[in-house]
Image (cartoon, rainbow, N blue to C red; front, side, top):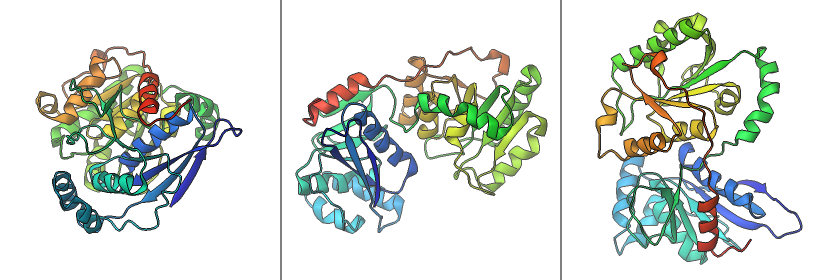
Length: 349
């Protein structure tokens, strides 16, 4: 169990938020982001529990979705997760994100008689399975939906600004910098070798045009082979700092977001894209040349929503640096959504 507490007024009794962590950093970040927004309104105590998965993750995901409509769903929870040691006493709301946590959230909510909130971006969940599903708006109205402008994250623009001066001292420079976060092909977004070659060339051309150097970080998804390909094509003079994750993993997101004047992200990860948006900095999302044509792709629809609402601009390997529009960057406003969530789970401010 991991415990963290956010209390806005010690004179009031803190509400207990229990988060189920099914093993994905991107998913638990969304749950923590909701807790962060709730803590801005009321004193909140957050308890996190890791729920290990007994089965291979791909199989567990498929089984979990099938069990939602099955009369055997309670038995299925035990097949997938060993749910022991989770303290539901005085739990005021149970929160999870990610497909592997679906049935555990449903089961524990009924066991503890507490409201359940599922935070998600692209899953299609049958109505009535959770008390509340918090998600971006795709036009479908449902009684259990609360729409948010973008997914929740832990990124706080005020914190980024407050840390900027100390980070500039740590890095030994106060120069303008651009940040680039690189993933790799995913189930929803597929990149070709030419896309990566074009991205490296984009960085080189951008630096040659304006002299602004880059902060670069790969991720667990990138892998050594792609990292070597990029390193062979990037101009070392264009790079202020690089984290090559396969060689030396380092969590650098908040530091880069604090220092950068613009943020660039490969669009395979909704979490990385949303963290960039929530920084309040101008945000540019790199697409493979085929991805944005996939109209039925839920991942692409989310990215389109970011663009349509002015949070980001998409570019691909055919884009020249000078062709990008100048964005002002603005952080999302969750206030209306949080009002509805508080109302639906019965919390009074």
